[in-house]
Length: 234
Image (cartoon, rainbow, N blue to C red; front, side, top):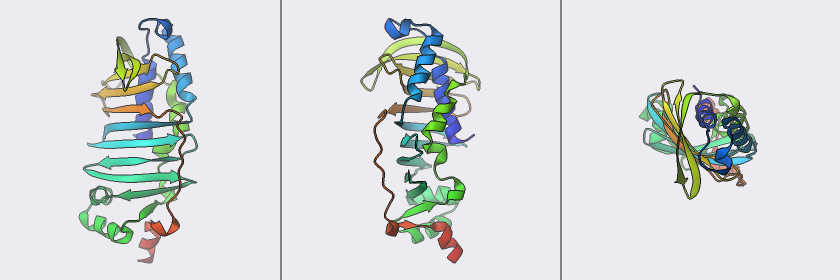
């Protein structure tokens, strides 16, 4: 399963389980609440999501700001390694530490070869590999929100998520996991946090910086190394 699909399912599960709790918005019918939440999430032009998900036997950490233009910036980590990434103007760039490259290349020797080529520069991600399209395409991520993934749901208490009032919804998922979604009770009714335990890919993500503009610039040409070209020349 792709990372983007995993994140989309996490969002879908949260949206599919909305029920009433308290007054105002929470007094509306389940269908009305769900429709409003999906509608509000789909109006977003940009968002930040941060957290981790268990995938392929390891934990993948992600902190990314992305928009509907396919642009993004953030960090990604796995097995103790971390990398910064930028995707802008149709190109993607990556700068990782030694542990990240060991995980990516499969060996310390290969990782060292990459580091010797890069130094302190950014690696150009080959366009044939799609760049960071799985992570950075907010439009595609939000397109999948209309799917229902919950088998059952239960209303929880209202709580505080980073200073915002939210209603907690707990659901049983199709893969056997349990998801807790925290949805803003005030307009707009964004998902603020999602936690999934058990199932295929448990994890936890927070959503913030709604509609904050991304001012991104590609690294200077002299600060970028095309590893694919360098390998061909070698």
